[in-house]
Amino acid sequence: MSVRRVRSTWEELGRSDPFWAVLTHPDRRGGRWEHDEFFALGRQDVAEYIAMLAERELFLGDRVLDFGCGVGRLTNALAEHTREVIGVDIAGSMIEQATELNQHPERVTFMHYDGRVLPFPDAGFDSAVSLLVLQHSTPETQLANLLELRRVVRPGGMIMVQIPSRRRHPAPLPTEAGHVQLEPLAVPERLGRGQHAEIRVRITNRGAHTWRAEHRIRLGNHWLAGDRVLIQDDGRSDLPHTFRPGQDAELTLPITAPGRAGDYQLELDLVQETVSWFADLGSRPARLPVRVEHAEHVSDGEHTAHVEPDLAPAPEPDLPEVSPEFDDAGIEMHGLEVSLVRALFNHCGCHIVDVVEDSLAGEEWESYTYFVRHGPS
Image 1 (cartoon, rainbow, N blue to C red):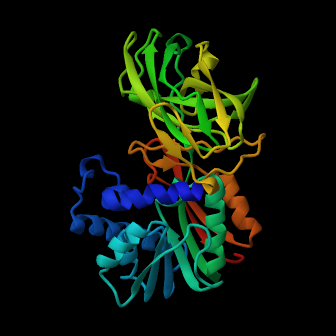
Image 2 (tube, one colour; image 1 turned 45 degrees about the vertical axis):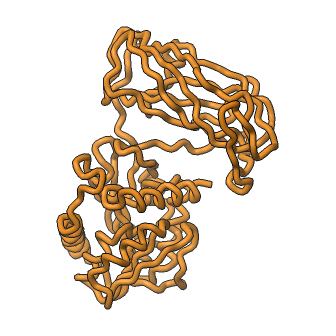
Image 3 (cartoon, helix red, strand yellow; image 1 turned 135 degrees about the vertical axis):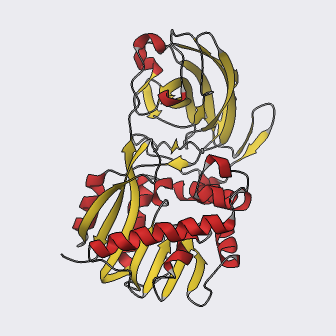
């Protein structure tokens, strides 16, 4: 399901604002990137990484894979340092534009792939590069991607990937700041299995402090079966950046019904991301009964939603779904602990030459670039 979600998101971004989706500079949203500037930054980044590779006695080789190539910002830059580069991306809309903007058609090829298995034989590349890509997939998908990169790079070849590790924690709110009144305005009483819906909720700051952007407070929800939390995290909706005591606002929250039919409670609460839910600070969450039915079409009284059965697999009851987090641009983000990345590569017979902290994932995330040799040291 996560691969489908990622594909859908990036197909839409590729159609609506592909350059900004790759480099989410706030002043460039809405098609404001100049193509020459955009690709020049790619050449600058690649030159810096080529120098870093040389310092570690690692090299691109003759055939390079650019994993998650987008519109080819790094792919074209890599082609200036090697004989052949193949860029792959999960979004066909990105590949179409990358092909149109290909600056080195004699050395660069762009390919669309399904997000799961790379369409290449084992050991077909001298190196693989992936920057600003894996962070947008869930941890299990990231791990599968890393194994695919290892598979297609020859023994002795090089893998260079950037992955965030974790969010930098904001300062916890004082207890007296964590009080909210939640008033659901439009919540369906019935949903189909796995059905996506949007609900409206009015929130009021009943605490004694102003909530600010750096607090990273969002409206979220859980799904409960009886007294047991079935899904710990589901949707998220950002609050206005400044939210004063007594201020209220109406928010729209995207939710997804559990994949099994039954009677559930939808619990609404605010969360300070990576710190705590407001219920832990003594605030009272809102709970509403929702019946989840087998039907693929269930009306909420205003519209009828359709759910593809193969997009709504039944989750294991004791395994909560991975909750997406979002960056400042609203794009899904996930981290992967450094120890886990190290263990994966070491287990697969790779040598991690170096792990370097970077700033690619933004100020809110700890992020690292891994320099890996496929094979022993």
